[in-house]
Length: 157
Image (cartoon, rainbow, N blue to C red; front, side, top):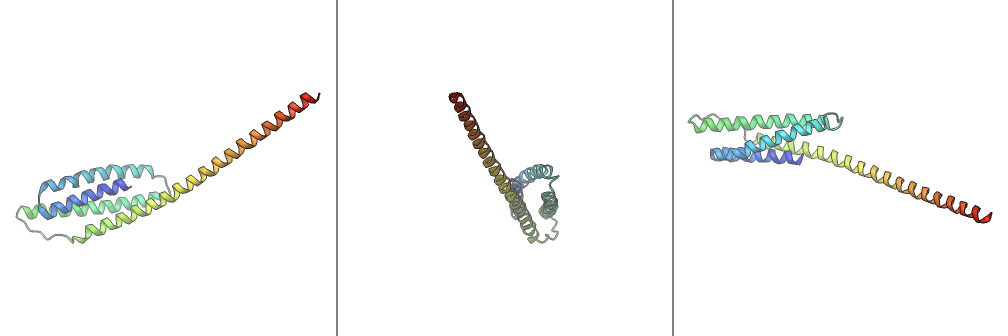
């Protein structure tokens, strides 16, 4: 999820650079970040599609990212029109920050859920490993006791 967030930050940086300068080369991080974050979001959607806890969070994230992309597209189009001589009114600039803030919160919440789940899985795995170790120790002890009893029976006879 952090890689997707990184792609979104790149797209945001490219958008801001273009809006400030009007120079097309500043859109390169926007295009790259948008493409990379789209690919990663599709992977996350597939990975958590059947997860009762994270699937709703992924849908929420997808909707927030969609809103951010629509906003960025409107801002870029508005700037392109301004560069060509038109002067349409810019949308509320704070909307981009609000969208990114909501995305960051959603990613942080999903990451926290995953961290708790991973810690739980690690604890379960550790418990299983301890049980296996105890079982091996018990079997080894029983094997040794059986061998000692067998030797005692052989030498006693």
